[in-house]
Length: 309
Image (cartoon, rainbow, N blue to C red; front, side):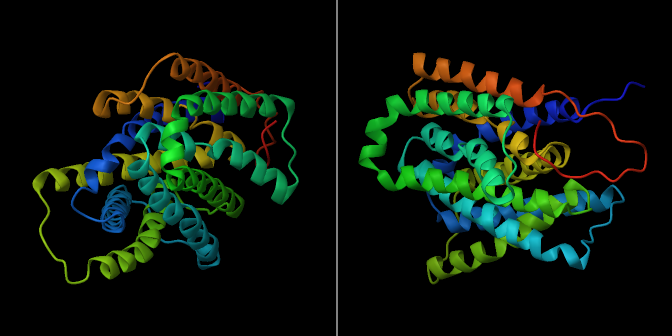
């Protein structure tokens, strides 16, 4: 059987991630019509974490994480899962969901810069070109959204915060190289991140108990199982296969799908700027995933984490 490169293994996961995360953004305003953002995220993260760990056990996988890795696992969960889930949801409420997705998915640019700033791993010209194309795609999508950001600057800032938090947490997790299956790691990260969200949820909702409508329950259930469960499992698998900077760039098509979904569900704009952005982001994705593979190391040689080449 021919050896498949990490990029070839990651491509199907990237397609799954693009679909389930891209269609997710338009559902955020629907999920929080009756409950707070904190409650919505606490419930969805907890449900997704439990489901993934149960599935891992059903497959015969150990759900244990070595004690030495609990600190970086917890740090990464707090840095990006808590920050990302709160900031991205509030952004999608304050500004059009597709535009919030664009800002949140500036994470590829942040990831490359964070890796460079913290670890001195200078991006190669190929990676700089991919980042430039992704940035151009974001820029094209920002042009028609100026009015939305002017009227809701908090949405703009929260969208950027979501992207930066995700990038920083991904780098922390990648550097830790936790030796457990992606499914198990995902489940524990979701449960860890759910704890502070439950605290905030109880604090905000204390004394205002009620049963939400079946529509809200259905939306939150879908988000917990598909985007949060399946989507996060796909993401962590991608992080395990690719360098952090390339893993970040693998998600650049998500905001395009979010834009299309937002146009269908909420009548958000979709025109020449969005189509141009789609071309830029698709080119950036192709550059990131078709880079020249490094020469295979001899069998038994430890694999090291390094930047994209």
